[in-house]
Picture 1 (cartoon, rainbow, N blue to C red):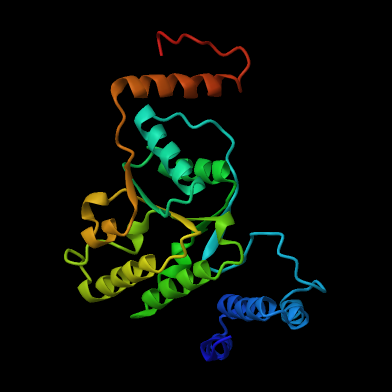
Picture 2 (cartoon, helix red, strand yellow; picture 1 turned 60 degrees about the vertical axis):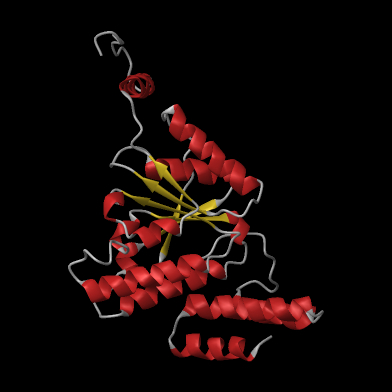
Length: 263
């Protein structure tokens, strides 16, 4: 255990930051467990839990900045080119080849967020979405501080290999630093995102989505291991997907007509 762990513990306690205080205490407990002092480790964890002993069975965590997103088992029809890219992400993560940050860009309604839900299900990871309403603060400099807190929580997850983090519409906190109306504040926020992405725990999978890719800071784009374009719908794709969606909806209605040619 380092002196910094103790200093962090005091700092988070004084700031009343329960989530980071808990994560730091867990790190200290892990240290004592690693050097064979299992009794002290269990005692620390018992102070953090209503249970008598700490048994790390769940990958769940609680935080002001995150919302747990439930699984989606419904089929998601996509163009084959996008489907292949999603398969590539799943294979890359499963084979631990060192890439874990992905950006999905495209117009609204092209399936970006729903694809993230499917990826979480196929990877058997719990999906957490960042709550930008809690993250963004009108006070100067506070949003950047909140971003640091968010990434600290992510990097101190007890089971990072069981978590997928979604930054849905990340453009809310990271647009082009040059073209922003509030240059200094947005520049500070975007720069913070850049630094924190560089330090992201490689066991965590992070996926961001955006409808405003053309306004993105190029430095931010480079922080992602792969950018997936969801605008690749040809006319035949739209027709095939529309037929799949129509058939799925018609199953919910009795005596509904099914004139696919007319449709």
